[in-house]
Amino acid sequence: MSNYHIKHLEEYYQVYRKSVANPELFWEEIAEEHFMWRRKWDKILSWDFSKPSIKWFEGAQLNITENCIDRHLLARGNKTAILFEPNDPKEKAQHITYNELHKKVCKFANVLKNKGIVKGDRVCIYLPMIPELAIAVLACARIGAIHSVVFAGFSSTALASRINDSECKMVITSDGSYRGTKTIDLKGIVDEALKECSCVKTVLVVKRINSNIIMEEGRDYLLQPELDQAPTICKAEIMNAEDALFILYTSGSTGQPKGMVHTTAGYLVYTAYTFKNVFQYREEDVYWCTADIGWITGHSYIVYGPLANGATTVMFEGVPSYPNFGRFWDIVEKHKVTQFYTAPTAIRALAKEGLTHLEKYDLSSLKVLGTVGEPINEEAWHWYDDNVGKKKAPIVDTWWQTETGGIMITPIPYATPTKPTYATLPFPGVQPALINENGEEIKENQVDGRLCIKFPWPSMARTIWGNHQRYKDTYFSAFENKYFTGDGALRDEVGYYRITGRVDDVIIVSGHNLGTAPIEDAINEHPAVAESAIVGFPHDIKGNALYGYVTLKEAGEGRNHDNLRKEINQIITEQIGPIAKLDKIQFTSGLPKTRSGKIMRRILRKIAHKDTSNLGDISTLLNPEVVNDIMNNTV
Ligand code: WT7
Image (cartoon, rainbow, N blue to C red):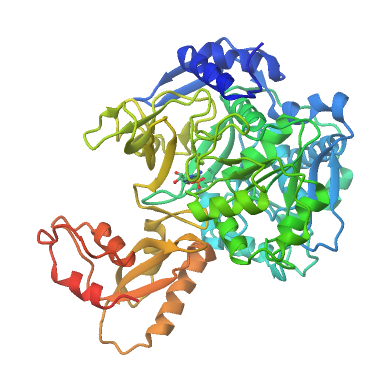
């Protein structure tokens, strides 16, 4: 019997040691006992980080939706699989049982087939957090189509570039979405994007807000009439273990977003096993992750991980502030939520509102609290622990990435003693390493370094869509034979890890991973802008906010700078989305550069942090004089 469910610390250490001593055997036992295979593997693992090539469960065949839906039908067909809580608290919550989910996914899958989608085709999903989003994802997986979910807060330009990069044949969207008191015209955004996308042949439109939309004949179809005609049975496509399941875009420090490719078997095994243990999931639980399915957190821990365990997973359409800041707690009380998983930025925003809302609700159902997306500060950690968990529900600070597919460093609740701001210990099967400036692994404790992973785990991304070289360069070239995460971390005296943040040009704003380069590219499109540089600076709620240094083509042009600021943020909103807007914009006479012409972000970062006591040696700069000028004119 494999140690599928870890319940105390000794057991964790025992399981962990086993997972390192013989990873193949360890994962084989888990895979063997807990999943539905159409064919078992010939080989558990083959890998070579220098290529890089990683294959898990080669030779095995399966369909992930049979694991997430079909195999639960006998034992828990009438159990709620998806519990949908709408934006408007007056609208009734929907309980979709496993039986109903099975039908809905099969029907949707048949619609995809009717529209000519076959195994391997890419389908872009641009939907709000409504059940159709999860169903569309599963419908793609049912027939072996590769889903590419794009967060419905991204602009038409960002959407178009993602659609084109992976040459999606279809887009699934809705007329619009609700967000608190607002509605957003998603179909309009899709129409705009598709002007640039010749690869898209079909658009399926879910009606959600009943707005007036323009339907292009021969391309656009309302989903409902198509579903009405579709059969309720759809045989699952038999997939190979390493067939692509989905593409999910994430920002890099340079260039276009990276389409991370996740494959089938390893992803299923890892997300299911982590879900079970990190949330100490039990059959009667009601689990709620507040993320959007547009991010990896939603893929792995709203859809696949929970459903693979036969869990009830809550999907919330709205925002934490509508109709007021008690909404999250209202939902916890109403549905007796047992596990609650959110981001530090949400915790800080809620903490700022004080306790009046929170105190109105009964939160005693909560057993585990989770956080993810960025380092959690000590104050937010204690607020969460004291007021939400009442010191009785352990906090799991889960460190992972779009690229890792599943949770990598985390406490196991009720087993690992927690420590504020520490993600604590590696999950079984995860072998972290800290690397010093010389590229050597530091073995001792009480050190910090660059965080790498030195052995493959089943849910790691296998490549970047259409650009394997970039995958190699980004993750496997910094340090030989290791996956480099882009994060820095420190390890304390007992081996607990604390993630200290990105060491590259990625900035995490409200838990959203933003690369500086695409934002700078957007700003530079403004006709008055010569060049720009973005850095992060600490922000009470967002964790980091963006500070932009912008050099104009003509300094004394006499333009109204506030207008210019608005215009710059407008361009960013159009090109990327409102999440990437700058909080502060400083117009500068120049940007500090090295002699090779590289912008010295380190200096700009310090200035934005108002930490100018030690700027380091600036004498080697090409233009040291701009530094004083910038320091004297901060905003
Ligand atoms: C980056 C990955 C994984 C889902 C959400 C983000 C940061 C993530 C933590 C944490 C400190 C964290 C890292 C990582 N991050 N979780 N618990 N503590 N930092 O996925 O958008 O791919 O971002 O988020 O910097 O590299 P992502």
